[in-house]
Each structure stands twice: as C-alpha cells, then as structure tokens.
Image (tube, rainbow, N blue to C red; front, side, top):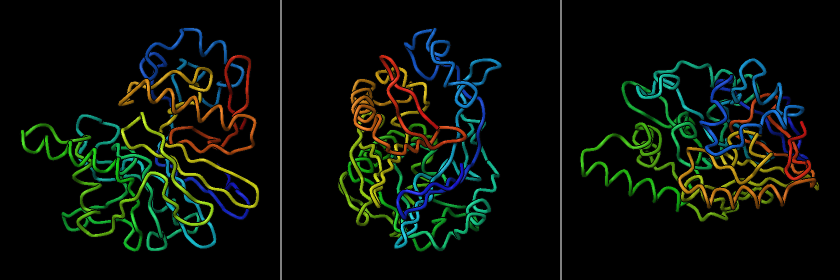
Length: 294
C-alpha cells in the first residue's frame, strides 16, 4: 500500500504476510456458490486468486500519524508465539519491526496502540520475547483497549484457568494482552473514546462482544479502520454474510450492513486488517450490493 493522506494525517501499512488463504464457503458459511463469479470483474485478481478462487488475505497493521501522535492500529500475530494449532502463526520470524522502521517509525516512537478486538491475529506484536519474558514491544505507548472487549476476554480467561482448560485464543490473551496490563501500559476506555481531535473509537459489536472501529477525520477527509468487520472484500457483495470467526453472526451482519450503507459513495477510505494489496479503498454501490474501488 502506498502511503495514504487523510487530510494532513498519514496512513502507512506494516505487512506481516499476505497470500491465498481460505475457500469462500469456509470463511463465509452460506455464501452463494456463484458470488465470486458474479463479482469477478472487481474481486479478481486483487481479492480472489484466479488460479483456485481462494480468498487472498493479508495480516497487517496500520500506522496513523496525525502530527500530534503516532497510532498503531492492530498488531497482527507476532513473533515467537506458541500457536501449535495454527502452523501459520506458530513461532513466526517476520521482519515486522524492520518494516516499521523502513517507514520511519521506531517502536519507541509509537504513542498509542489500539486493538480493534482481542483475537490472536490482532494482538501479537503487543509484546515481544525478552530474556524468556513477554514485554511490551512499544515501551512508550499507551495500549488502548475498549473496556467491554477486555472484560469479556478477561472473564473468559479466568473461567478457563479455573477449569484448567485450553489456553484462551491460542494463548494470545496470556502472552500478548496480560503482559501489557501487568506493565501498566494498558488504558481501558469506553467504546466511543476520543484519542485526539479527529480520531475516535466507535462500537462495532458482533465479530466480538466489544469490537470497535477507529475513525479518522481531518481536512474534510475521512477514513475508518474496520478491523474484522469485514475479513474479505467479497462481503461487500452481500454484507449480510458473516465470517465463521464471528462471535455473534447476526449482530455482526447488522453492524457490517450499517457501516457499508453509511460509507458507500461517501469518499471514506476503508482500511481493513485482512484486505490485501492495494489495501485501501472506497465503497461504491454496485447493483443490489457493493464493491470496493481501489
């Protein structure tokens, strides 16, 4: 993704990985079998692999620089994490921090880290392994967690710990969230919290119980960092389609449909965590559905 300007704000992406990942009927249960064919003119080749119709997904973070603050949005899967049930995430060695430095951002320069939700592939770089301990990767940052989202996962973590069950979220709550809290770098906020003038959270429940998006407005321009409100641009063809990873598919569908309707043909730039290159786009109406103009 080329750097994007939202007024005087600048947005860069930091890529962890990208490539063909899931079949449509796995990621979006109930999707019409002809959804890709009916939308091939805009889904291929950016969002769907022409070779086998697998959905192309990215794992990436976004850096928003406002002139006052440097804000990192979502933090991928991370390095060195024990994820044996997910081989693609297990003990990774990605040059993520080098890629951040390449866009002019040192870890010490990050003022805020905002996680749209607390799934394992959105919190991984919150921490890094140092002398056998998980420590905050961004030592000067305040990590912004929506209180509703954090409390849900904390309650789940305690319940599982009491029963001796499998680690929550592949172990990511324990190795990528709790160390931040223990280091007193976490800030728990309401779901409509304003980080600074022109940058604020907005509730977007359904994918997870406390999922939020981040809005950025400056100089008459607007962007929304939507996390996993959509996993793939193919959901624009039918916003009622929720992913197999959504906690509440019905609420997720309502949230997604409302977001798409509001931002269609508005000029708002959409940044989704899993949309592949070229990443940034604007929603436009297309027949009975929508498409992404990149």
